[in-house]
Length: 243
Image (cartoon, rainbow, N blue to C red; front, side, top):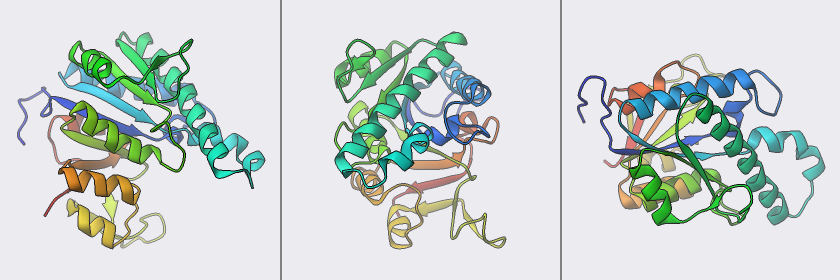
């Protein structure tokens, strides 16, 4: 797909952002500098003309309470994680509003005094009106990851692509932090990702994208301008699609 210079190559995109991306160099929690930097990255995407939805994780918050959750019932622990994503969504909403971006948060769990409930048609309307929509609380059900929520929401709102923000600049055949000779793929199929267990996203989310032919681009959130380049249609990171 070829983009007009300075203009988005996609009409509507969904960004999967991990909670850990908000930590910066901290052990857990939300780092103000990291949050502000990400908000500026998202602002540039909106300025390029793309409609932007975000699914955010909660690992940075849950990490701080993980020792207390050890041995806890899985469903209860998952609900704690979902609530952590609401905290992150509110933090990102505030950061975006500080840089002049219109934004709404919708939660799959009802927290009506704080954020909107997830309503598909309302979310699409927000996107059409140029607002960033942050989807919190995953799918609203335990045993499903926020990766799966990202694929699901992308399909529900008609996104053209999922952008998966990670710590590394794409998909590798093995861990590049442990293997200096690790090979990065420019493009790879859904089937290869699943068969080789490359850990791009969880298997359910990749299978969902494969079944609906929804492309996924994996890139580094720590690389300045990486998200914008991907939205402009440049070959940033690794593209996962059929074939």
